[in-house]
Image (cartoon, rainbow, N blue to C red; front, side, top):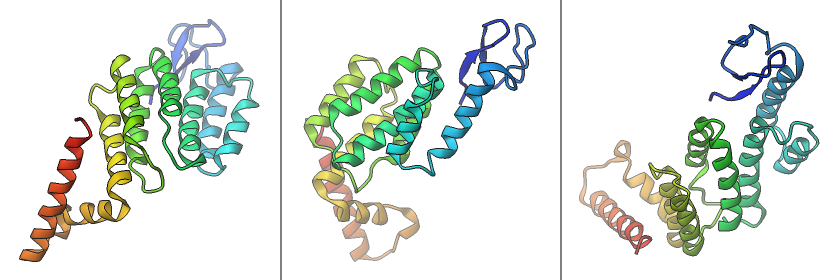
Length: 210
């Protein structure tokens, strides 16, 4: 993911993929505020997998760079996990609050949106969180009204989350097993069960948009 910060020497906006400032030649990666930000970014990426969410968010709030896009993006990811786990329900208002942060960061770098969509596609669906239809509809409206998620990556994952909530974790496990070509068994019982699960899944999927 390409991110941006200001060169300490000439204040130009430079990509973190560069080794030196393309405008003045300054080694921004190893001195000044830019170097501090890059170190903080690396620390946050490491801590994300070792700290609990509350401690991670407190660490960010204590940073003098908490409002920088590089830091806000990582805060947004952590906030989503906190909102999903604090009561086990995806609330549309909370989810849209995070989406709004990403929407603003998208103006800095479109990579933030693509990275966030990928992140959502990895963590959802999950059997540990519920998403109800009214919340899904509110989130979908937010995405449409703000011209986000053109490829419907997030919307598709949210639909699957609604299905887990409605149909149950066991159904989803069976659906994933029977529809995976690697598990195919060429007998009538298996094929009948697979077709039943597919039909029920597809009908429920269609019903979400009605």
